[in-house]
Image 1 (cartoon, rainbow, N blue to C red):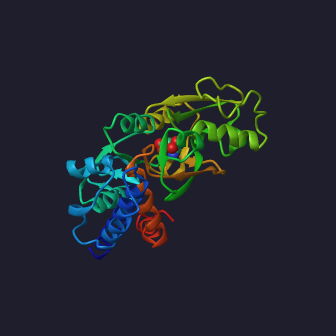
Image 2 (cartoon, rainbow, N blue to C red):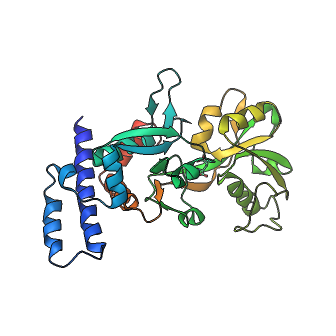
Length: 302
Ligand code: GLU
């Protein structure tokens, strides 16, 4: 409870300073207006009633709900209990804290690597907290907060396959999720390790669907389907971030030796939106004051 109050206060302070940023950045803002707005930012009492938010943030406040895309099967990040339907995990907590900072409720929508950006672009959700890796390419289309967690990619195999390392993956078929960084990360790791030549590899144009040099990919819409495909022998290996693989790491399955391709997770929002700046300020505050470290520890992620 005490912690929540701290988050709320931080959030509100951030929201108020956003107001300053927006006022300073808008064409209407004059030099005379600034001190008044700055003074308002210092008085954080009843901010929901007095804050002047950027239009997109105000729309969320008026709606009374922050709609967030989350994972529902990544333990410690976004997990929905199948019996109670309750969500838990650090991304669930962060989403709730952002909503609290705005004084609104939070609504979770389960997303996949394949659906999260469509839902953000269509306005069905306001932001994504779903093990979403920050990449230069993605930054061209969406805003990302400073990372709140760094994971790595690895590969899960059936023990009977005898596959134990990157070297064993040559000429194998690997299951990956559509819209994920996994295939590219694996090909780069194989090239770097000298296991494949990388002939024809181009970081800009790489497409898992057409890549056949040394390793092949089968793309799926969701992770449970890849896990089933691995059991059925439809694919030889299942490649994605280790945090995501954890739930599929059952008896008779192992990770290969290597972990590679650091994956920095950030909160994704619509490019140049008011929410982007507000979320960034909140995340930075929670990184600085140890709140995010606390969530990492609470969720057993360190
Ligand atoms: N984190 C990786 C990505 O953003 C893996 C996919 C996923 O998050 O489901 O591409």
